[in-house]
Length: 286
Ligand code: NDP
Image 1 (cartoon, rainbow, N blue to C red):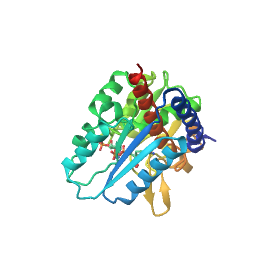
Image 2: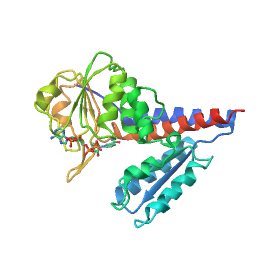
Image 3: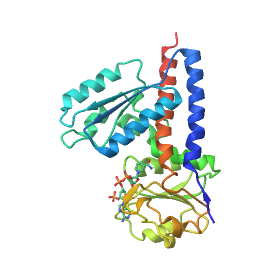
């Protein structure tokens, strides 16, 4: 039977540490980490995410501001707000909640964020730094997974890690972080042939597909560490990309959905904001 990787407990523990570091930073430098979250439109899921981010900031003692703009907000107005926040010394992290309404170009909007305040690490500057291995702001979901692996004593060094999914938000940065920790990495996607055989070779299997219970028992090697990124809303509730009941008896460690990767994502956003605030405090030193 697999050990259950408890993301909720790990996130609570990490938030405690972030709160303590925040207290020390304030005391030593007078700097309070500040996060600005911009939401355009009324997508219900996005509203929940923004609310959770705001709550997370309060929990660790950050300053936070949220901007809820109407769905018909124009590009210039949005870019103006981002430029203002880029120049606001009380704000160390800027996050634009995606997806944006169709008339707004996500890449142009993301690129407007100053790289040192890009706490989602989506700008080309930060993506480039992640590729080269010289980074301190990390995409939140992959960063949360790396933290979970470390907490649960799973070293990627020399392991075969298979990442199913190649999105810019999850799959690609996940593969790079595993590579930087010396895993041998295979990235799979919808054109991959022999997916089952490749997955069966994985010591660490990361599923970021967006399809309910896509990874089944016959795709998992005995003793594998299985990380389920998927969040799929079905008639029977929230389910991951892994068939948990089928896979769990085979795996050595496995993340549940919910309560696995999900709780770590916002925690890593808080971690990135703290990192950005520390860098700003260093720059301000006389
Ligand atoms: P995307 O839809 O952007 O990417 C899905 C990836 O899965 C694509 O690369 C796609 O391949 C691949 N894929 C689709 N079908 C197959 C298939 N049959 N065989 C192999 N690969 C396939 O999703 P995201 O990366 O944004 O998210 C993935 C999942 O993670 C979603 O359920 C999402 O809700 C969840 N998520 C969870 C987060 C958390 O905090 N826990 C945060 C972010 C996402 P191709 O590129 O060829 O199309």
